[in-house]
Length: 220
Image 1 (cartoon, rainbow, N blue to C red):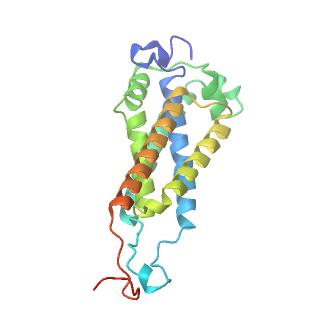
Image 2 (image 1 turned 180 degrees about the horizontal axis):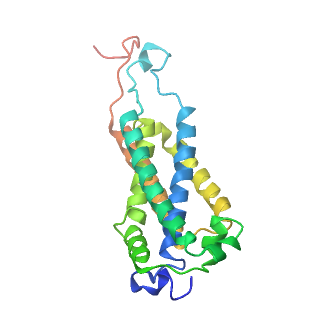
Image 3 (image 1 turned 90 degrees about the vertical axis):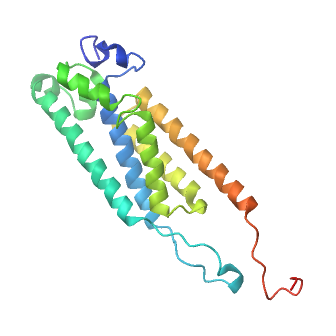
């Protein structure tokens, strides 16, 4: 975006794209991840094992449907708010938008201006502690993954794969490399998945195995 756009503010200097673009693309990446995560979760099985009695004590994990619905409703509301903001901005620059193939090419071009109120809102949304900022966005993705799997550590890599697939889809929708804020959000999510996996390993290694009564070597 030109210097008279969102990036004219010092608070967005670290970003190579406008605050409005960053809000839109991080929202798109989150939406695609949510879709892929739901698809992955729908194909997963979180029921008690049907194997031998030795496996009957294995902990079962149930998706937290209440939290999932709450998070989806919150994300939908915030996305609608953001979409309204962008559409209002585009309606004021119809000629510029009309030359673009779609909303994504319009945002990528940076060939538009932003009023002070819109700029301030976008800057707040992508700030370090903003709703569409790296911290909150990555936390929501991880929380959604945990809620979807019921916290099952065996599903961590499935959720990681779903996130990666969603992020790639967001890149294709955008039409190229996503803005820096989205790349940093990706890295933050991957680091949090790594931490989850590491904690799961520690928990597994410190959890004593359950003796099998049928095993003749088991002490009585």
